[in-house]
Structures are given as C-alpha cells and as structure tokens.
Amino acid sequence: MSITVRNLTKVYGAQKAINDLSFEVKTGEILGFLGPNGAGKSTTMKIITCYIPPTAGTVEIDGLNIFDHSLEVRRKIGYLPEMNPLYLDMNVLDYLEYSARLHGVGRELIGPRIKEMVGVCGLGTVRHKDIGELSKGFRQRVGLAQALLHEPEVLILDEPTSGLDPNQIVEIRNLIKQLGRAKTFVLSTHILSEVQATCDRVLIINEGTIVADGTPSQLQQDFRGAETITLELRTGATNPLEEVAPKLSALPSVAGVELSSNADSVSRFVLSVEKGSDIREDVFRLAVAEGWVLLEMTRSSTSLEEVFHKLTMS
Image 1 (cartoon, rainbow, N blue to C red):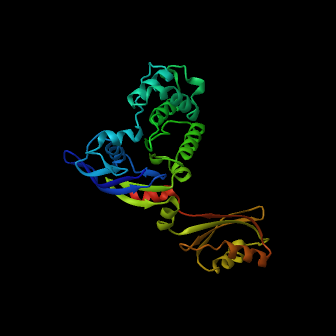
Image 2: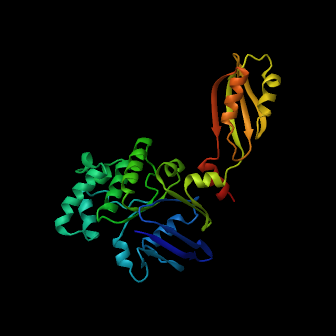
Image 3: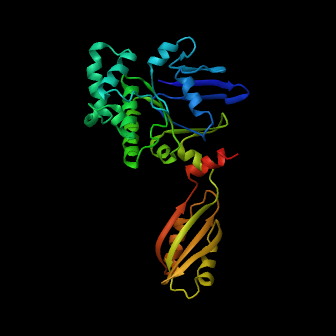
C-alpha cells in the first residue's frame, strides 16, 4: 500500500514547519525519515496519520486522501508516536484489548489478535503486569503491539528505539525488518546505524525541505569526498618515510601519503585517494613486488553520518 505526499506545507504563525514536501513510499518499502530536531519530521508524520491538518497540500494512502477519507485512512495506518501514549495503570492485556476495541477489531478477533501480538512483540513474560511496572523497552513493545493490532498495511513509527538499550534496539530492528516484508513503513530515528541496517530508502529533510532522497548506499556515493586507505606494513626499511612513502605516492590516484606511526618494524601509512578510486589491488601488488608484509589494509569512505552532517548543518 503506497503513501503519496504532495506539496505538503504546515505553518504555525510565522513559522513554516514543513515547506512544499512531495514524496512517495511504495508498498513493502521501509523509508528512513531523517532530519535534525525541528526539521519537520513529526509534523509530517502527524499529518500523514490525520492527527493534524496541513496548511496546504495533501496526502494519499492507497489513493485515499486525508481530507475526504480520513476515517478510512486511519484504519489503514498503525501509528507509534514519539511520546508513546500508554495508560501506565492498565494491565498490558487490558490495554491491548482496549486498543483493539478503539481500532474497531471485531469482537471475535480481539483475543486471537492480542495473542498474536504478544508473541510477535515479545510480551509473553510481562503480559499480566501493569504498564507502569515495565522497562522502557517493554513499553515500546506494547506501543508497537497496539499499532499492529488492527493489521494495518502502513506503519508510521516516530523514534521507535528512543531510550532503548543496544539489545532492545536490535530486537526492535529485527521486528521491523520482519514486518517490513509485507507492510509499508515510515521510520523516523536519530540512530543512523539503524537506518543503515533497516531501511530500503532514506529521505532527509532540513528546515522543512527535502535535501536528499535515495538508498543509503546511493547517498554515500553521491556525497562521497576523498577516501583514505590505512596500511600497516612490515617493510624492513630503515627510513620508511624516504624508502616506502615515495613508492606508495607513485600509485595511480594517490593524492598524499602520511606516515602515522613506525614502531617494532611495523609502519602505519594513511593514503589520501581521489574520489571514486579503489587502489587496494594496486597496493597489494606493490607490496608483493617489494617484498613487504601487508598486515592491514582498511578503506574508509563517507558514512551516512557524514552525509547527514553535510546536508543539515546550517
């Protein structure tokens, strides 16, 4: 089920929270929706889920726009807001039953759906506890379970792993990847490693405007700068800076060579390489020809964090 956002604008007084946003999310796609605080991510998600109206533009879910078919759109969406709206004094099972009724799940289906979500979200050990007794991780799972209860085809998750420990983040990540095979996801997060591991596509907004759209690897390729190759060599050279560095400098596409350390007969070099060049094979062949022992070779390229930083720094 697709999401189509057309010319979306939201104005609060004199402040434009989002400005003429347009994008699509295809069926079965997991979209990482990124941006710094105040960029307009949560505002966009609230408009998609019919929580607030836009100032201009529209959103369509499976061809249904949010103005003329608001109730139908809400039935198709599961939403986990950034501030997980849980009733802390309610038992987990009671809360899920209450949520199922709010979502309009048929009476005969409520029990089976709750049982399924308890299993899917790993709530079996805490299902009889009050929500107020649960850890942050289990509360997030409860929030995710309520978003899934009515079998929505679209899931909008705003910071679903916020405040979780590394083990819990991995569990939620695996759950999203599993569910993403059959559903359409829009996932907002500040944890860029999560995006790299989970999302099919990344959309970055800054000051209410889209500044990048593509797969994580495409964005890294598009915004890639000079690369570096780090080498550890055992060369037997008395003076590696004079005997080894010039030979490395002579390799194609090498813009500079720095000797970062030299101890115990092991020299560590950092090679600056022109954008888009991969000289690892050339380095290997040179080492073989010169009789050097190649202990380590690491290629560093532009990370998603660096792309994000370049695009969102004012």
